[in-house]
Image (tube, rainbow, N blue to C red):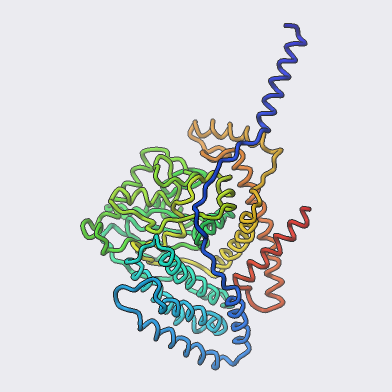
Length: 493
């Protein structure tokens, strides 16, 4: 072969490699659950609540206090009618209680010194509903929706009131249910935590909001971690699965220093048959997770397959550990039924749409909420992120694909090869193990879009507050986020 032939061969090989680097990956087929996602369908009520809040701001404070007292008495009367033991999920009393909690929110928002009584009522309702749910079949749509409406709904109503407080005077720690435990313990963030406790939190990244909102029952939490307390030294370890690292064991200080918008502490009920038989079962579960994390490198499971524990996603860290002691978490399985949302998540590597979502763990009747850490700034940041995410997910449901910058694909593939080599040598690399080059580009584009819309939304919120004198409630945030999305689309066009 002459020189001309050799160069032609080299050019052909080079051209073939370049073409291969540009070829898009075959899209995986995703099959969402054949159900309908939960929707409130109460836009008229939200608008009416906002009007009531504006009206209450114009009234004398004492007159609003009288209205709050009357509504509080009405709520207490309904609460007193609840049975001591079991109650059907479809009982009209629960619907009446939900309505009363929403009716109180705009009044309390106008007179914040009544927040204490409202918070106390909300916590008692949440406790009682969780007790009732222990006898409910959470595979039933009625039971699942009732539980969600009262737990998520009461939190949403309370937070709308909290976010109208002019200064950050709300305590960062809200104690809920001091569930007894016999496992080793230590103090963390002002609360006594026990080995086997579960920390459910909300991160600050755009994908954290996506995880929290991307299910049939959108929520406020995006991450799960398991607490282990050493029986001898009382040292607290936190076992968690992170996208970049896989499963890791962090110190309590490291966990607390990582930015979070909110954290909730959950604990298994002491009266569960598993714990009655063996009160140390939660500690044994946490100890198993700790040993497993230290014994092997466990990659992050982007597919969200909670049945195969070779790889683990964050929620699976807790569920896999508790499987070892005969306890199945997530009695109400998480579902992703929207075809558009499933396509977006599938583009990021998710393959299982009937799985375990962090935000749904709160609704498991086997667990008590012990405490929550939050600040007003964190709550509002959470609401802003959620509003942007909800506005973006509307485009997914309308059939818009999750896009990426196609001409960066060769670069991403080269970075992926570098990352694989780095991970094989014990490093991290640029693209996490288990994430494809295309998924990394789509993740980057989604993050960029979310950040830009978030910035636009913040500016719109500032103008809203200047014009109206109060923080926009969540439904207004979503409306403003839609405007930001549409403006961005026009600019792009």
